[in-house]
Length: 313
Ligand SMILES: [Fe+2]
Ligand SMILES: [Fe+2]
Image (cartoon, rainbow, N blue to C red; front, side):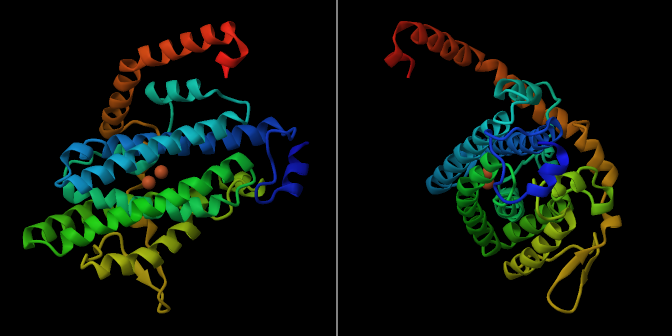
């Protein structure tokens, strides 16, 4: 198939490893899915400390389950990316540890306190769900298929985040104020989650033409604002004055995109902010610390493959 044939055929779950696809498609899909897989892993790193630091056993259990889910999403997505035949899972994990792998802007910032946890679990996961639901229609079947499981679990993550937000916003005055402060810090980053505005987005046109994605950054951002501004207000959060938000008079919202700090966003996109170095450092150290596990698994696989067909299974 050449690119023109791909564009003609492109539709939900249209292509799978049995298709002979041009390298341009396979590279674009790899870039997109690898970014997504990396983001799942790096998000889990931010939340992992709260398995210990959450204030009750129930919350610890919920964080433990969520972190396991996110790592699982990452692994599933590395496999979906690997099936394009461009990069192996090992290569993608190495690229992440070496600071070459790119990941979502929100996961380049530290998550320091309990009041910040719903900013990820409720708002960022809510934003992720918006995007991921549309990716069930992606043209790369293994990716779209993975989204069935991922979206199902994200639904639980958002409920978990919402329960913490509710608890904090019906708690003491100090809790409410600190949660509002955390919201003001995270709000612009969450709005930038969807990436640059359409005319600055370099990858959209091709990805849309070959059916890898079905909605633009701006369409997704607006859909998120329309759903989450009312939710934030319902829990008593005040929407900050900056960036300016326009209410269109019909219950829909739009953001003044020039009010957002795009220089910071693009520095982060190059893995070049102090936060990027800190988060990638954590990942590299863990990758190194568990190398012996990977090596012994590889040894075991090699040995058992030689022993008998049953053992190789
Ligand atoms: Fe996830
Ligand atoms: Fe999640």
